[in-house]
Image (cartoon, rainbow, N blue to C red; front, side, top):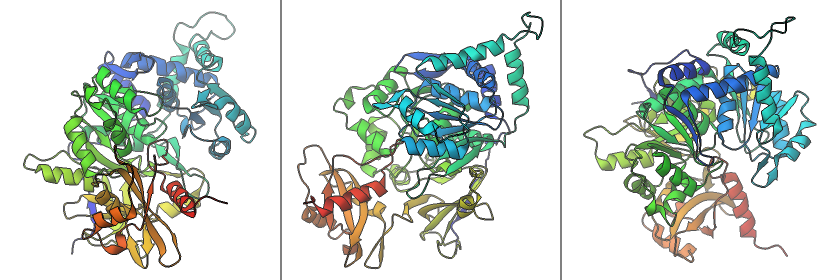
Amino acid sequence: MTLSYASSPGGELTLTGQTIGAALAGTTNQHGDREALVEEASGRRWSYAELDASVAEVARGLLAYGVAAGERVATWAPSSAEWVLVQLAAVRVGAILVSLNPAYGTDELAYALRQSGTSILVAAGEHRGTDCRAVVRAARTACPDLREVVHLDDASWTALLAAGERVACDTVRGTGRGVAHDAGDDELAARAASLSCDDPINIQYTSGTTGHPKGATLSHHSILNNARITGSLLRYTEHDRICLPVPLYHTFGMVVGVLAAVSHGACAVIPASSFDPAATLHAVERERCTSLYGVPTMFIAELNLPDFATYDLSTLRTGIMGGSPCPAEVMKRVIAEMHLSEIAIAYGMTETSPIATQTLLPAADESALLTLRRRTETVGVAHPYLELKVVDPVTGRTVERGERGELCVRGYSVMLGYWAEPERTAEAIDVARWMHTGDLAVMGDDGYVQIVGRIKDMIIRGGENVYPREIEEFLHAHPKIADVQVVGVPDEKYGEEIAACVILAPGARALTVDEVAAYCEGHLARFKTPRLVRVVADFPLTASGKVRKAVLREETVEALRGPRP
C-alpha cells in the first residue's frame, strides 16, 4: 500500500532568508541596466535602476505620511505601473500591503479596510465606469483607522511623491542648511535593517461564498521564495520577458509575476489595466515576450480572436496556466499555435502563497502523449520544500494513491493565518500545520496530482457522487461546444440534477439535451449524463478569470424557473 503523501527536495534550488526589499536591491546591483517593467498601454518603461529609484521615491512618501513597520497600506486599483511601485515601496518600509479587488463595492471595500485596520489607501479614480472616489468617500465613514487616501490619477498621488522629496531634501534641524547626505535614504536603510523575512507583508482577501472574505496573511519568506522557485522551474533568467494579463492584486500577478521577475532579473510586461485578449497578444508581439500567464478562459479568448493568426508569438517559450484545469484540445492549440512548448500547469491558492504544485519540464524520453496528459489531467507534483497529502475528508486519514480525498499542503509557503481571525485560521490549518485546501484530489503513482473538484462543488445525484470536472472534460470535445461548466441544481427526485452550461462554438446555433445525451451514450455513466442544458453567452468570472460557479449555479436555477408572471 502506497499512501497519497509526497514531498519534493529542493535540489539545487535553495530558500532565501532575504526580505523583498533586499531581493530588489540585489537584482538592481546585478542587472541595473536591464529592463524591469513595461506598461504597454502608456509606453512607459523602467530599467531595474530606474525602478529601484521610483520605488524609493514612493517609499519616502510613505515614510513622510508616517507609515510605520507593520501598518497596513491598501491598494484598490486595476493593474498599472503605479500598482507595482506601491507594492514594492510598501514592503520596503515594512508596511503590510493589503491587496484589494478593484471590483469591490462600497460594503466590501469598507469591510476589508476596517477589518485590516488600513491606514493608507491607494486607489484608482475611476474603473470600468465606477467613480472610485465616490465609493471611497462612502466606505471611509466606516473605517476609523483610515487617515490618508491617495488616488493614482490626481494631485494626491503627486502630493505623496512631493512629500517623499521633502524627506529626501530634509534640512539640519535648527540651521536651515541642507543635509550633505540623503536623509530619506538613510531612513529607508534604517527601516530595511529592522525588517525580518518572517514579518507579515501581504494580506489577500479571499472571495468566500458565504460570510465575509478572509484576509490570508503572507510573509516576505513565503511569497518571495514561492516566486523564486516558480520562476526557477520555468528556467527564468534576466533575458525573459513575462506578459502579465492576470490582475496584480492577486498572488498570480504580484507574486508569480512581479516577484518572479524581480528575483530573476526578468522584465514584467503589463499589457492592459484589465484582461483584454487582443491587448495581451499585441504586448507579446511588440515586447517580444518569452512567457505568458493566464487561466484557461484567458487562453481560450486569445485563441478565439478572429485575427489570432496575424500575431507573431514566436518568441514565446513558457508560461503558467492555472486557476482551473485546461481542456486537452485547448492545450494542444496553446502548445502548437502559441509556441508555448514549455508551458507549466500550476496549482495553488492564496493561502499557499500561491503555488503548491507545478508540472515539470518533460524528460528527454517522455512521450508527447504523457506530456499532454500531465498538462491537461494533472496540476503537477509537489513544489520544492513543500509536502502534500490526500486525506479522507471525514476521518482525516491519508488515503491510498489513486483514491479521492482532500488535498492538504504543508511547508514554508503556508500562510501565517487569517488576519485577526484565529478561529477561522484553525478551521483551515490544523495543529500539525497542514493547510486544508477544500479541493478534492487524486495522487497518482508518479506523484502527479489531479484536482477532481471542490468538496462543496461535488454533486450528489441519487446518492451517487458526481465530479463536474470529469463531465466538463468530456463535453469539451463536442464540436458544438466552445466551453462548458457543469453545476448541480436542486431536484425533488434525485436531490440534485446535473446541468451543463454551454458556450456554443462558432457557427453552432443550438444544442439540445438529446444531442448531449447521445454524445455521452456509452462514454459516461447514465447518472453522470447532464439532464439539463443551458446555452449562455459567457460565464460569470472573478477578476482573475476564474468561473464563479456559485453564481453560475444561482443563475441556472433562476433560468430553469422560467420567466416570472
